Image 1 (tube, rainbow, N blue to C red):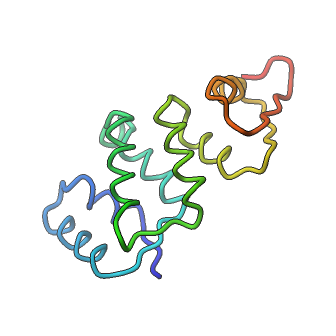
Image 2: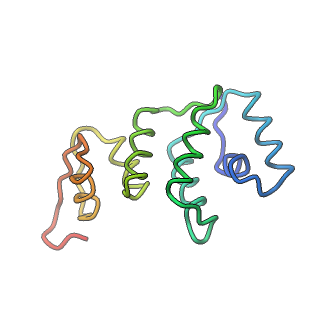
Length: 135
């Protein structure tokens, strides 16, 4: 199993460099590859950020689901990753969604928007909000 970097995923998904896109595709086709949660976090940032490619949330989720569905692509915690993608698709920040999806049954934060979004999405996690003026 070979862990892969964000740049391989981005080249594969974006195809903005023909040579690297082909090499990334061939690599993914011929090796068992592990996508770490931290690499997914960076990939979402690169694809969705205005400083990156500015892709819409739905396009990011669709392409990452495609990538994670490839026969030789794995992630160490697929249930948590797919949950985080669903929460991200529903409007939660992907970093927050990833933290929450990987947490146990309780997660403490000062982040009121995270707390409120988790409640709206009816996550199975208890998000404990600290501080009176959290933001």
